[in-house]
Picture 1 (cartoon, helix red, strand yellow):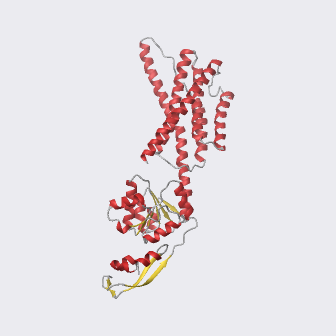
Picture 2: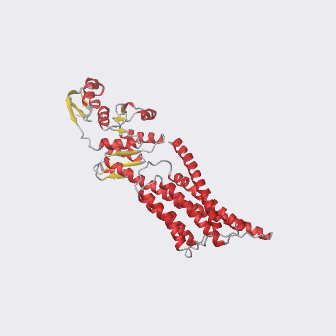
Picture 3: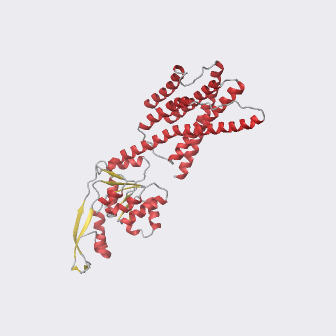
Length: 412
């Protein structure tokens, strides 16, 4: 008793039409009579077919919905199985696998190039050997795909180990569970949409929160370099009897104000909210692209505030420092706005808290955070610089997002 192709060998054509008709959604085993077996267990004589044993799997009610979810998310679903190609195709068609009618018998794929060509346009593969499953995974990775593999048998372990993400069922074999990165404790593939959603929420929200932190880091580095250069120039200028009056514009308590309302609170809220957006591009690249506009505009704001404040308006250090704090906070608010799009009730409330918190703190506790009183001239300078760099921030952000999106599409 066994698979008709292997039991009958070259005589398979005798029952081929029956197998194709019965195997549409049923696993078939052929029962045949033989004269006997030799000492090595090989068949003696020509097998005579007696009948078939059909085994039909019960398709889970959630299978079609799960396959549809991944299709909507742009994930290509492939079925690779050791069962008969007709059976695999019939079951795949019932659950909505795209291209299920175009099935391939993996025994016809002799070389690596055959596998690569078949994977381009076909989605259902039957009679796949364990080593071929691994070959399929490697071929997809070679083509630039990120491959997730799910399986529960010993035959799946090679492919599971080679995949970028491997998922096993708790009801499956010990070998499959041991090599898998993720084990579904309910043995139900319908749990995968929830798993994917949680992973996307974590990564997408971490990217947004990291952008907030990286803006401050880039700003601090740039500002430190800027004022280090100024110091070196001041030393050189002192030799020529010229002194530069600038000082580092931030005090530690002021950085606490900026960090709390433009980084700490937004990152806490944005990191915990649901986010099922598909992950595209590389993590570090996505974070840097989001961070550059805020860092560049913050540094430019500080530079303008120092040049205009000291040389054109004759402001003292406390006034320039307060101006830099409010301008940097303003750029931070613009970044929060950009990361919050599209707005929801929670994101709108977050923006109100950020803007209200900065304004309220500066008005109610100016001495604590070393915020000097503003004159009408300082307010005018603040409004002009804030308006200019708000436009510059969103223009630069849009340009970088467009270029980054083009790079992602080309890499995909």
